[in-house]
Length: 284
Length: 216
Image 1 (spheres, one colour):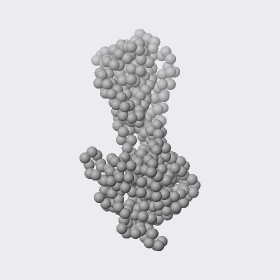
Image 2 (cartoon, chains in turn orange, cyan; image 1 turned 90 degrees about the horizontal axis):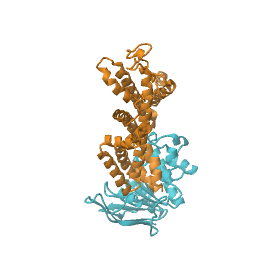
Image 3 (cartoon, helix red, strand yellow; image 1 turned 135 degrees about the vertical axis):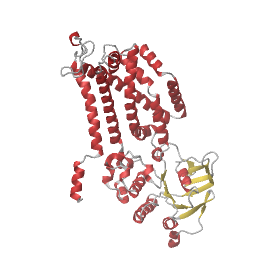
Image 4 (cartoon, helix red, strand yellow; image 1 turned 180 degrees about the vertical axis):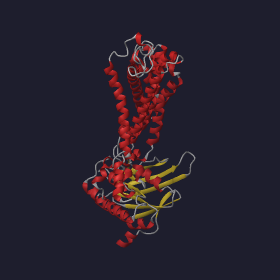
């Protein structure tokens, strides 16, 4: 192959970073699109129309209608938006708690490490559905209560992972060098540890997100979560259970598939960000 | 004068004793060579001098006083493989400035090109990165350097370039250097004085350095 031909081929093909950026951006676009569409929908999908009960998918109702004659497409989009908000906020708070505790454990000395390890063990030792119900109930239910309840029960696993990661990093040669340059542990934590933890944090966030949505659905199902009037995906799925055996497959299929799509979007965003934050991928 | 006094060190509680009552002294502006077979504790002694490793017993003092904790350490350690001594997620420009940004003269003397600043460590060769690691350690507070096999994996031209620079540094800023190396010929050329590691402590080398002989 001549040099010019080879050059032409590399120019046509996108490099790894560009592909990762495009995938992450499309994932983000879909997620943002769902949120914007839900905002624009207003009252559609909330109002009942008993003349159009349980219609299968058609051009007028691409996702069919539910037992009260509400359009399932509108309800699915609204449901995704609610679940996204709850899942994203809860998972993000969890990641922030986990990162702060892991950094404290690794840099503030043995005492802090013992306290954090105890907190992790204590929280993991409790059955967390009970803890979730208690916290959500104590806070009076509703969206905020669910977010707080999920956030404060889901940090221990990620804290363990991040703490182990930092303990390994503490003995890295460049950390010792930084300390002998007179840099404080606070500087080391922010500039050496934190950038290194970003991939773990993203993976933690992505893995925690579906978990948060499921807990939201579970809490709501048990009556300690969101108001039943909110069309969250969890509520749609549990409502559909009764009708699946009667052949109303669209009630469960479309909300389920759309949830899968959103989770895949998060996966794309997570993977893309990991590639973009990895210096070794800079030439791919 | 940088001194290690009666240093003992062993790996783990029941591990092999690497250093046993080891002492060494390096005067300002002096280049001391330290040689010896692999695994005998040359690097460990170097790391103890720069307080990268804490000894089991014994003290490291400068001008008779222990080094104050915190702040830029006057003894800096240069490792054989600089890739482990730099954060892989930092660009070279940031790595260079971690202690204090090196001046233009230092950059020019070590051949550090401006376009390296935007690169990541793995985008430089071993020799290029070693020069970056040296430049980074030359902050104003530096008084002693421990150079642990820093030129062992480099080509002859780079080796000469680095040691010419360090010799000038020792003379101009009267920085004491401990040069750890297997390479007897290299040590003979660059050192004012040589010691060899044997059975847990350094002992003065019988052979007089070539440099001293040439001067007399």
